[in-house]
Amino acid sequence: MAPTDETAQVAQQASPLGTTPPTGPPTGDAAVPGGRMPRWLPRAMVLALALIAVFQLGSWAFHQLTGLLINILIAFFLALAVEPAVSWMASRGLRRGLATFLVFLGSTIAIAGFFALLGSMLAGQIIKLVEGFPGYLDSVINWINAHFRTDLKRVDIQDSLLKSDWLRKYVQNSATGVLDVSAQVLGGLFQLLTIALFSFYFAADGPRLRRALCSVLPPARQAEVLRAWEIAVDKTGGYLYSRGLMALISGVAHYILLEFLGVPYAPVLGVWVGLVSQFIPTIGTYLAGALPMLIAFTIDPWYALWVLIFVLVYQQFENYVLQPKLTAKAVNIHPAVAFGSVVAGAALLGAVGALIAIPAVATLQAFLGAYVKRYDVTDDPRVQGHRPRKSVTLRARVRRLFSR
Image (cartoon, rainbow, N blue to C red; front, side):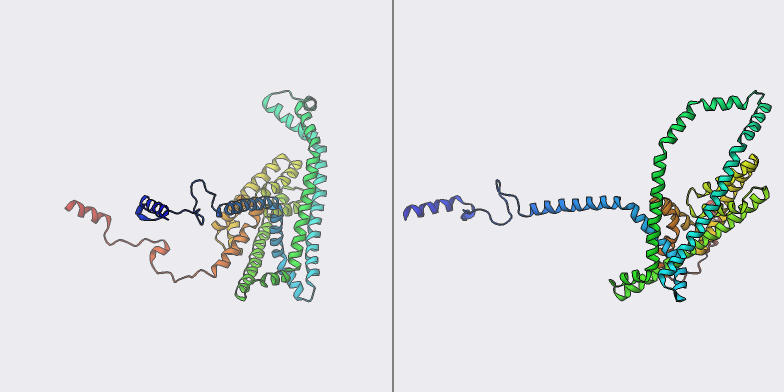
């Protein structure tokens, strides 16, 4: 037993503070040089990789479904637009599904009849334009020869055009682009069918959709959701009312001009200008004005110039005078807010965002207005934009400065 005691004494003397050094392996998550990694590190790495994978998968799915989500958004606002008519018919004892079908059927018949009449008119005018093109070309050539002392001939111009490389390349590109145009047309028809189906289901099953949404919310939240839904219906209807009123004013104004100039199909062209300029954002104005100009050109090229000038002047009047007042009155938002919402909607969702931006912002503003506490405004003249008059004038201040 003596050597053992001597060994213990030597170890105790070598240890600092007189303590016995540990002899076993380290316990817990504390690592020593050359030891294993902490137990939590593999789990943290797996969790981080899983979160990154879920984020990437969600981002990919969102980008893949962006088109469908936009179509559903358009369908929802269309359902809100037809909600008053469907509810009115349902309150008269008609089944909601049948009422929705009748509303959509009437809208489809009206749109199809309008485009059929417009197509027949446009086809007749194109045929007339093609038949009279040589005469127009002769008149232009005679005007150029008379004013610029040239000796141009229609036969020479036609031969140079037919033998030009530009025409050959244009025909080749047009032939190769037929399939692309067909694919775009089929895609557009499928998109319209998708929007129509979703909007029909939203309008027909509106009460069921509201019950399903309210069933997962407490009673206080249910009242807020129903109130927001009602506000959305009112604001969307008011917005469509304002656009329809502007379409009527625009159509009547352009009809008067076209009738005064003697342009054929003036009523149909007036309806075309009114509807296209108001319900197709961004490019609707240019599409609306191009057709009356084309038909006016078949009568007299100067008539086309007058139509162009009238379209530009009326567009400025509508943008700065008519549209802000009517839109702000119908949806109860400031004209600057309406303009800014259209710009923001176009930046986010393009033409669709520009079309639905105003009713969406009006709905949000009306819903949040109930939760904003307001106070009585003071009678301070600065509220009205009037600065209070100072008791000491500038001249008196100058005199006081120099008198020191």
